[in-house]
Length: 496
Image 1 (cartoon, rainbow, N blue to C red):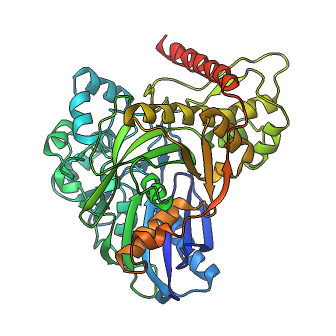
Image 2 (cartoon, rainbow, N blue to C red):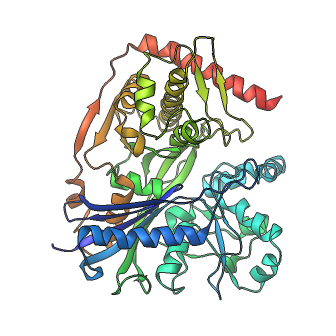
Image 3 (tube, one colour):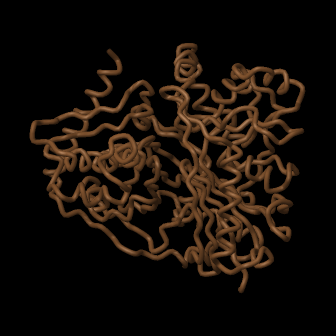
């Protein structure tokens, strides 16, 4: 098998492209950051054209690095930042407004209104989601209601809405494909995860015309051929939201298996099998993927700020010069010495779902240094992960023996060890940590017969290192109580 698979991994802060070989190993990687736009406090936007230009640029760069032509690529898979909302003109292909990013909080008050009107239970039953500004539906509504002339264009059938996967597919096929997959559709708050269709009642609640919606397809099939960018036509054959792609790339294909991706945010997912289970712990129930006639579901806990707290230390506070510096600075102290950092810059996700909470640092003394704050910032990633894992155990009734991890922060051995100590269970880091892109590659490769079946790709997953608990459980309990006290402080400040 001389050919390769190209995975497009379109993330929140950068666009990446990775070429994978038949052994599931990356042979070339290209990455480019793009602009983060903050028009007002709590607002986060991207330029959709810049998303496309950076993603298309790194796709070609990855092929060049690998020494390949487009004819050497069997298929393309897409993994993408989820919920981020793009609305564009079908005739011109141009966006009518910037992409509103998943982190954006501008619709928080409208979400409060929906909750007061009593829509919470109905929306959770249909979508598996908690009402929150995080999801796409309120972002679409905001664009339709607040951008001049857009509502009229929507009503006349001239607009298209999509999450970033849809936007990339549209551009790759010169507008021939307006599609999404079930995993991305399940993040919009407009998709019924029980019937696997757009929900007419939800569209009516949000006043969104059905004509702007993409066609929903499975996560692994030949959607169409590329018409742009490459010298030859390549099948576009795999598509999944980044966290679902990572779950697949980690080969968490059996019920009860759990992964956590440490990226801009942290996203923990548990495979719960072929039936959706509604969470009692304010987790999300979401579609993991659909392959053939089988649909798998997952429980998910979303932590909005993880790696982003390191970017904040770098860009806003100037405590470090590069993100990689944070490990050395944090490791220069034995502990945070009672300093806790609740990085609720965009509110708190699971299991609190308090969109009004803001970032808080507690426990500062005259002896506190930049190193203690850096340590507390990294610790906050592990504490938030613990909270979500405990909620998953509560919902599923499954005692989780190991956590499979991936994402940029997993290279930090001290953080992974602290995570294992807090969880009092094994944390397993695979040899190939590019699991988001790998999941997209696997989904695309399965669709075109590049890999024969799930058994073949499951055999490729290998452990690089296992972190086991070293700290006594009694010691972790004290630390955890300090963290929860800090969270209560942050919430009470917001409530006041």
